[in-house]
Image 1 (cartoon, rainbow, N blue to C red):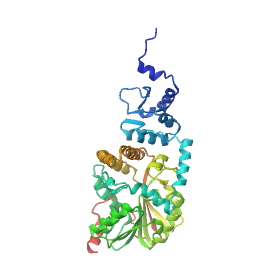
Image 2: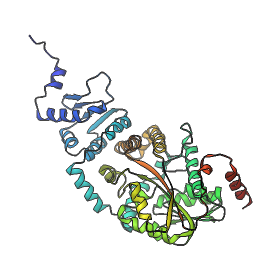
Image 3: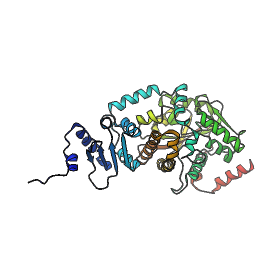
Image 4: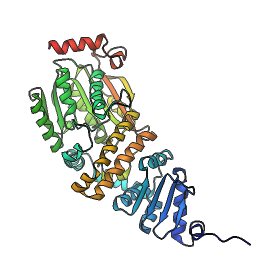
Length: 422
């Protein structure tokens, strides 16, 4: 005679309903993540051990059906709404999920194409897209970014560095790659809150014109320039990168290429071509992919409208019509994972204040965005490229990379002497 099973085992192993069948199907899809699933009526599926990596509680049938039919959209929507509750390390769960590859559905493809249309990066569309993310509230970003509000990948010479030191190191790393010298002219396309432009002016004695279409960021950057006494050396311009004018020794763009959109790469190439001197050099620092594919539709819908992280070859291809040479390419993916871990930790410590500012749903929205981004860079589904290029007559780029890594070497001493005597 067979021994009776417990009611929990019965609910888990012999579901008698359509929703039980769906839950079992979802449990199989998530088996590799070590997740334990629980439905609002007590049905359970997934990991059978004592210590599941995460526990997912699905509060209604709509969320369950959405996670089966359109997980790319419904996972985020249900989590933000509170219809999906997650206990455990969210970033680690997503890391394993991303390593298994994405499951594009008809629903996500339709949403992606609709977003392509409504979030076009025209002059007007770009301003609206940037406003939705960067003009939220500077006080919000102060809660979890570094003190200079650098909202791009830091550079960790060693993993124990503080976020503040790593962001300064990143800015100096960019300047070292460009081999900036006192008295040179630099144009920055998409300057954020102005930290890099101010660093260039203060530490390298160059003159900078910086373009940005975020009102909040430009206002903050101008205030910082006045406080530092650099307003005559740095000009912050509230305008689109497509309206850059003048000729410069260096062109730099950190974290903007993701917002250009692949249909507008020709316009960016035109800006670089007309603004960079034949002896000049430029640097693109951007989130990218190993191969061309759209950004997650939920991220585009809720966090970064109009965004598209290009594959490395797409970035190189739009430079091909220009008379420039790609002289250095580097992937700093692991550095961005470390950066995002700092941001996520700081965000969690400030979550109560964030909830007071925007509400609990907003906290879940940004927690998922930051944890998902961290998982993306850990798993390798997202990359962080730095691409250095130079004009045909450029003589500034050294033949080796020693200037990037050797502290107090001859080149560094020469640069310090030039700064002091300028």
